[in-house]
Length: 210
Image 1 (cartoon, helix red, strand yellow):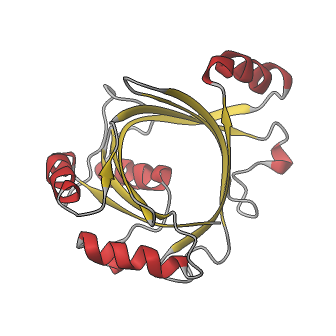
Image 2 (cartoon, rainbow, N blue to C red):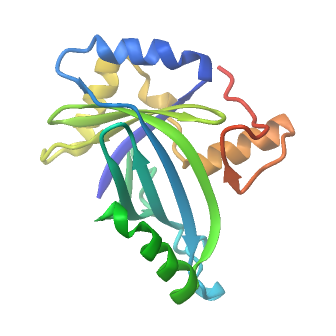
């Protein structure tokens, strides 16, 4: 199970957020990475992951920086209890794949399993981490997301997230409770901007406005 909260900021806030996190004792800053995440649906319509009864995302993600190249398969699903409390509680399962096997993986996904490519997005991610939490600053084409996720073995993981929300100086009541695609879709609708299924840098994008 995953416990996390997420906030959105205008792109212009990037350097401010990075400086703020660098100043917090005990957080280690990792190398900025490029990520591309592709989301696929079940080939049978009646078993679609996007049905309200399932409300899940099957994802393949590649991560690259100057020192590493990684590939991951993940399943993430909102639960009926996800937003009952102040901290998001979601089902998440991840599998790391040898990056050199990426082409073979995509062949199986597309040609054997016949899964449907639904949407994808690009972002740059900078992670700050310690034994309790992982804080990610994500640069999307439409704005910045700051995500705080529990990494501790505490019996009360929600309290760990709340503790770090306070340390970082954020308001738990202002966290955004839904996913990146919900945020992107709502921005497109409110700003009358065309919505793309594949969200990449260089396309006309709405903007997070403070």
